[in-house]
Image 1: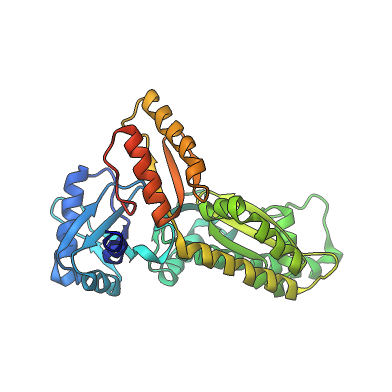
Image 2 (image 1 turned 30 degrees about the vertical axis):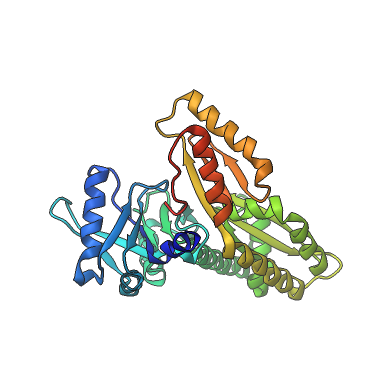
Length: 355
């Protein structure tokens, strides 16, 4: 039974960009099933479509044959078309097993890059560079919603940080060239970053590879809860300090050289070792979400109490309580058993952990 449980995610793909709220959930699941069974989409027999999921606009499609899942992923670009839909909707597909968290959503602020006409061109460039990400409409204030696999979101974030660093460096050079022509009251452009971050990017423009590590926020929370001693030892042995900035589902760790050993070598050392730790976590961590949807306050409290009671039995499971759901993070076996016990205590049939 455990082997069958482990095999199913290999036949499962993550679909991002599913239009939300246009049709009933059952109809949308039917449209998705038809799409991924068509030969022109490189699909095959679909065993199950999980929609809706805990993430808006995301569905899980499980094929009967692992090769069909591989063919769909190999095709890459998909457009969801059906007579029941007003237009075609681009879909992004990824392997379920590529990341601990299959799909994340973040809001990016592109206002530091200029006027909207320039930002539209920038967004088009991002779409070409990151085809597995789904971009929402660009708002007038420079904000844009991006959804997709975490590793792709992380790569996009790094690209944006480097672009901002380059822009700030150019401003720094321009200010030096005009140092003899300061005018009182001249208004500086606001890049959207704190002055501390601006200074870091400008002073360390040759060290950008060692400055930041982007990771899923839930992975960061797990790391500082269960592996913080090891993480702090990495920083100490490499002679660097760090601080983290959480931005929704993505957290960025900023690394800074210590006073005793300045330079880029300690930063590269710390970055490599932290990324090694994260690779280890990505290799075994999974997340299950227990929703409070359709639950009254009494049922919600019972579910939270059940999680609290099970903490001691599962010391390596991280439990995150939110107003509308509970996230449990740990190994596949641990969270499967944890969720099964919670549902048993609630009198419900347990859900499979990849749903």
